[in-house]
Structure formats: C-alpha cells, structure tokens
Length: 498
Image (cartoon, rainbow, N blue to C red; front, side, top):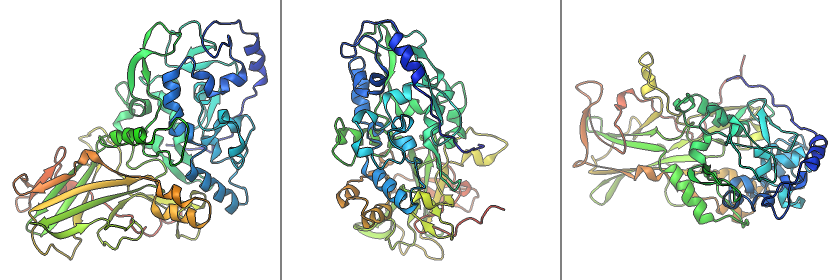
C-alpha cells in the first residue's frame, strides 16, 4: 500500500465555537445543559449523561488509558531524552490526539498535569472525525461546526449536540476501518512502517466488500438497545471497551483489570488453530499454527514489542523426552532452547544491530502469521499462507524416543521482557509496572494434545511420507506449509534499499 508522510492536521475552532453558541437550545441530557459548548463537547464526562453504557466501557478501555499507560509514558520520556526532543508529538499524536490538536501538549512531557478531559483518545476526537487524509500517524480531519458523527442515518432529536451519519462509523462499510487505521498504522521518523495493522487488514479477505469484517466488527461487539437515554429507537450499538492485547497496568478510574483480561482472552481464543504431527520415520515432531481469526497478521500492532512463543512438550509415560519453549524463570531473550519458536518483529538500527526502541529503527523483519486470504486456484500458496510449521528437534537431531503424548501451546505477551527490562534499567519504568504486564495463553488451542489413540494417519504429499496428526481445526498437509522462522535471536537485518 503506498505510504506518504502524514502531515499534522489541525483545524481552527473559533468558527464553530460561534456556531455552537448560536445553535438553538435543545432539551435533553448532558447535566442540564441544552446545547453543549465547545469545551463541554471535548469533555468525555459530558457524554456520560446521555450515553452511560458507552461511557463506562470507554472509561475503562485502553483508549481512555492511552496517555496514562506507564509503558507509553516511559517510552515517550526516554525517546524525548535520547532524541533531544526530536521525537516531538510523534507519540501523543495518537495517545493524546485532542490535547495535541488543542495545543495543550507538544511532546507529552506535561501529560500528568493536563485535565482528565484532555487525556487519551476521547469521545469527541473520534466522533468529530469527518474524513481522513492519509494512511498512518493519525491523519483524521475533525469537523469544524460541532457535529458529532455516528453510524445512524436517522439520529434522534433531543440531542444536546449536532448529530450526523458518517460511513467512518458504520461497521457495515469497509471504509469505516480507515477511522481506526489512521492511528493503527505507524511510520517512524526513519520511514519504517513499525505498526501495520490497517495495511495487514487490507490484504485479507476481511477487507473485501460487501461481506468483509471491519475493525469494529471484531473489537466493538454489538448488541441491541438505545444509543442514548434520550433515544426512542432500538439500535445496533457497540461496546466501547476495544479489547485487543494490552491491558491497564496501574490504578485507573473505571478500569476493571479482571474484566479487561477476560475480554482480551475471549478475543484471543478464536485467533489460532494448531496441529501436531509425529513423523515416525524421521523421529521428529512437526507442529503447525494457523491464523484463522485475526483480520490482520498475528501478532500485530507494536509487533517489535510483542513476544509470542510456541511451547511443545512430549512424554513417554510421565517422562519428558522433548521440550521446546520456556523453562520456569526464562524469557524469550534468555531461553537456552535451540528450537524456541518466537514470533515478533525484529527492528534494527543504523549500524545494522538489533534495537528495542522504535525511534531507533531503520529497518525491520517480521515472521508474523499473515491474515486469512481468499483461496485462489491460480496461487496454491493462498491455501496455506496463514500457516507456519516448525520441525522439532531441528536437524541433525532426532527424538531419543517416540512419544506417546505431545502438547502444543502458544503464548503472547504484549511487551517483551527485554524491552521492559531496558525501560526499567534506564529509570523510565517502575519495576512494579513491568511486572504487571500479563502473559496470555492462546486458549483456543486447548492446548492441542496428541496421542496415538487420537491421531489420524495422513499420507502427507507422497506415499512414503505418512504422518500421525491431531489438529484443533482443519488439517492442512504439512508438506505444503512454510517452515516458520524463529525470532528468539534476530537474524541479520535486511540489506539497505538500493
């Protein structure tokens, strides 16, 4: 997808301040106010009176928490210091966008002193968006007349603000993904596409109209009800908790850590399917994982910070005869396992060495699982592109004994231990905040358990290659699947562009 440098987008508010002041009084909720002023429109607390459910969901979400998150604050603080301020508004453009547009911050260093109404990704900032000019780094254009946009073509009367329909908020329209994509595709100052969630989605079957699936379709589950306390029409309304993989790490008003982790787990549980095959002839285990549920690559987002890994254990009776993964107390950076399969982005600095901070990245490599695509008879790889496999142990080693039970588990941590440790060491992150980052098991895998009794025998590509396999989904012949590359230790960086 072509990319261009996002320009800072700011619109003057003076013109529509006068329009809002001149608008006729409208009876309704909103703390007794008739027509909300410009300042009131910007304050999420004003939304609570008319939209209590949506406000409660948003108030405990990562959008509300975006400029209070200690990892974000630590990275921004360190980035400003190490770039001598050149990082500027790069982080806050998405983490506190309304504060940037209103001139309340230029670099995020004063965020703790700002009023709560200016922090995070606010109700107003999203619902005032009337268009988008660009593909990344927050190119949303906000309206200038105080109108708040939504998915309803027939907004109810009695609202204390102007209301209008916009396709950017209509989950049935694929273009609504643009509203999310502007902040969920990020290009750093070196031109490196660090976050590519929107671009990844555009390459999947979910982006194909008219029956695709938009960002809201996954991250804003729907229910029937009244959109506002003043409403009279039953609508399809959407949860504003936006579960993904990050969760609150510190005390935050409105946030329920237990509920948030449960919502994240529910979202993750439908993402992957897994397969275990035993090849008796070669005395090796072949495991496969398949991205069947994420409408983008997996993992996605700040993939240079994410750490996903595969855990495979094989037994003969009660004895472990093979284990690949992490031992207790190990991290993906310290594990001694030569077969450890880590999935993430590797980022590299100007000297070609691996770096951990996004502002240093001048190139990257990814081994993420691509999102699902439509099968194409002209392209046989389309049937298996979302699959990756790993052969254990790697050649020339073989299993000392053929196991009678094998398990496959996959884990995901939003921020890698080495990234957190680096932030703690630099004095920018409290150890307690680093310790609070949870690890999720991709529960939809079960885990996958293989036994002789449950395995099915497959001729895998040729009569002399027979595998005994168990799968949590639909088995795909392992002969056709690409061998997954581990990023436990980053490989050599890609050569510079000519």
